[in-house]
Image 1 (cartoon, rainbow, N blue to C red):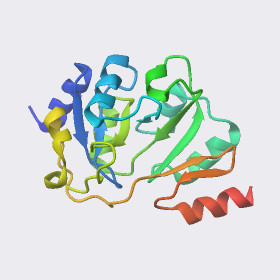
Image 2 (image 1 turned 120 degrees about the vertical axis):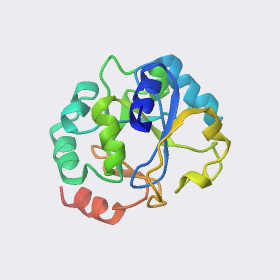
Image 3 (image 1 turned 60 degrees about the horizontal axis):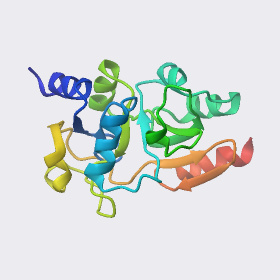
Image 4 (image 1 turned 90 degrees about the horizontal axis):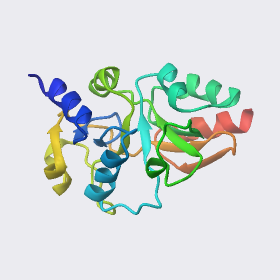
Length: 192
């Protein structure tokens, strides 16, 4: 069994995995399984008040779990796949634990071949950095902290970009976290 197959199996069994993105390594679990999402919070030592985003392979999959407005869809077509997390209204099947009870969910379509191959086989999965909250994000497998002990599978995709994704609320015209492409996103938001 390949590492990718093992990762798919682990997610389907409710376990955690570590996977590469173009920004940093992510901690993945079935984003629709409240117990698996709870394990992500526990592994990270993350406050339950802080939502976790979900990763999907493409925009068609995104709209199965989210209800983006026309403006948000235009934005997503422009910037995804890429190092961007887009906040948009969630659909009913998205569990409260993932969004910390909020009505919006962060949608991420990573621009990394291994991540996309994983997501084409199993999605949505959680999209949060593979590190204990408050510690540095990992850009390569040897840099992973103790969180890798909680993962059933670690997918090694080599060195990543090193900066977390830009988090944007398109409808509010706000960037909540600046990362890659933040200047281009700001320009886009100002020109709409």
